[in-house]
Image (cartoon, rainbow, N blue to C red; front, side):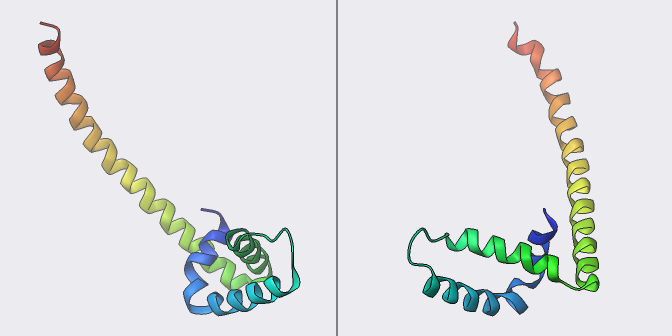
Length: 99
């Protein structure tokens, strides 16, 4: 997850949603042709607003990303244990398939 995506995940509902909706409405009023999609426009806003964020906010975002990474690594470890169990079962059964 990119830093600006984590920023969005943390702050969108509580702080950024109304700001985005205002920006989106203004954008739609100004642009008549070749409009960006709401998805594209929101991503651009989030990237810009993250860059403008205070160092304290950026620190919180990095801590969030670190926690996500740790959780993902733990999940991978759990999957490794589960996969090892499957591999043992397949090795045990594989001679049966070649009879």
